[in-house]
Length: 253
Image 1: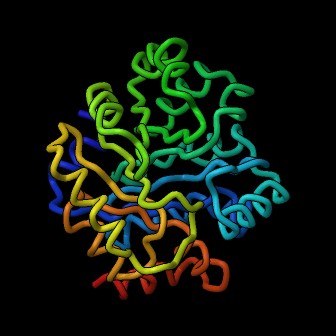
Image 2: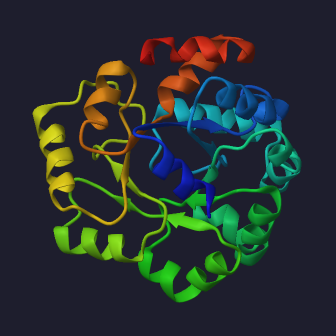
């Protein structure tokens, strides 16, 4: 069984963390993953930095720029993850954009993911039809889940179609804004959470974008399975020692 499935089945609510690989320093990736698992995180999204990250807000864009200047590449990331499965057990996903993956080679990328123990990928700018027509068979060959996204504007018909071809979970974008929005979850967003829950989809939903404190996490998980914290965590490690990561999660207790 894919580790994503077992984690979703064995936990009532999950907390997932996004971080940018190669930030603050190039070789911090493995230590951050280990410290996150020690801190009780259920799932980790490893951001593969890209020069034109359309869905990312200023915090993640800046961390990506620093990581690229540090020398982070797709191959270096795989090298850093080579022994990670000897040290952590929770699901690991790579979140990135299609251009670096195509440059690396889609099959080579999926093969490397499988070799180091990556369970899934999230590729916001990969069109669904291109994925199905060109890449789905490759992802399935290597057992890599491609996590698909929905937004507040996604029609019910399309949501149900995405649900029918999804594996693992559906990434539920909470807002039309980029990542890093720290506004409180408003009534419109709460109604969106309720609406998606009312569809009774086959795949659980994990909410991303705008989750930054206990209140927003609780609202996101009142109707959905879990939530993803990214920009707020990256703000934390900008100024804190990685060994203090466990302290970040005190506000979620």
